[in-house]
Length: 108
Length: 135
Image 1: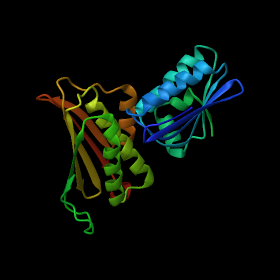
Image 2: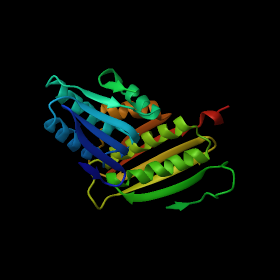
Image 3: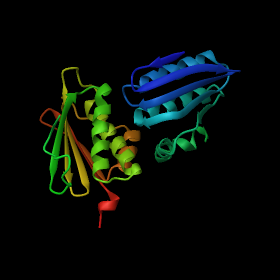
């Protein structure tokens, strides 16, 4: 599945029991709801964990960070995990600033 | 977009660029792009430009939250020496609510910021100073 609304592109696929959600571009209040839907759909479709590949993410603000935090919270409630894969230094720094890197598993 | 800035002249005295756009989230990118371009012109480092993008985005998002389709967001970018101050205004009947995550990001990415509400308008001010330009 792939969605694109101009400044962000989101692709989802299954990998075994896990779901891989690849997000590229910019996450702001306009585009973050798209990621929220994609993560909800991925969590519903997969039995395992949700891996969010953010290597192509060039911008994220509090709206995007809150979506990640919300998805992580609902997965943890089901004894599942949300893992962020390949954040750029910029994204990693923002995760650190808001303390998200203490809660979300990150695969650099 | 109107500008009093010359493209080639060095940035010295206060220069002002005004950007007016619909107060809708899909246009926040323009606010970020303008901030990033001006920050680069001022000699901001990469991290400072990224900080500026985040701070301006967060502040804009705060004051346009809940705005109707006809509302306009007016942004004033003021350049003075190594500092860029961005002032945003938007008509709104209620004060803005700053989410704790947004507040955290603003505290770290801006050198100073505030959000206010007066006479039926929300406003913000974000200030960023280029480290290299501070003596």
